Length: 265
Length: 92
Image (cartoon, rainbow over all chains, first blue to last red; front, side):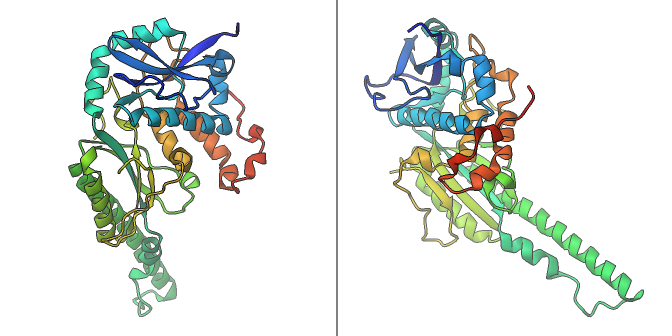
């Protein structure tokens, strides 16, 4: 084949048994293979630059159907690797010109990769999203200001007073929700080796009108995942104004930063 | 034991656990959650990459794509008939 090709890199790991990724379809539909250098293994796939080159990527990343398919394929491969061996996932759309440049990348960052792989060993990422439970929003308004509200100023003033009370009750409720979400995050962080915060997802994307208060990721020792799941359940019970959603286990996407160590809290 | 991907609301009852779904994990994951991770997480290594990721705000790009096509997402699972052109935005 003469069409220009690049190497899509999925992840870096120490080593992986030969043939263990034979059944996994990659982003380009090709065979997933490895590039080895300096005791490290990059999981990669030869991809046509016509679809995965710079100009094509800029275009394709805005095509939701392409993006979804590619993101799922990227994840599928990384997920298959992480079942065998600790991984440092690469960000989506990391494409190198060929084996030599991937090998150079591995060698150039070998110490960082090894340190990161050590951090990921026998650990998993879990996600917790916290929403305001719908009923809390609904109950917030009528909490204050009864109908006996007939102070000076007649009906108009009474209305305004009631309205102001309602608004401040809503503000209080929101503040309380935020504090509760922070408490949840604090409690879950206690169980985790590390945590990271993603921006809350927009309501158009979550499919619920309830505002998302927390979109967090936690890096857990493998053997703590049961404790963690139980803790999420207990926190959901003790914070009835919140709705908690648990996802995972994930490959450690949110904790793979080789360069930025400690910026997430 | 924790290999199966879990997703769902945690029911606030002490003995209940989130349902562990044995279905094909990758396809069950919400796209938004996945994009949070594969677009903003993972390692970025400068070098001979074809596309310098730092040049493109991938998260903005993807969110624009997502928001633009949110009606397509909300549609039925077979709603693949939505034209891809809906997703694309002019500019850049």
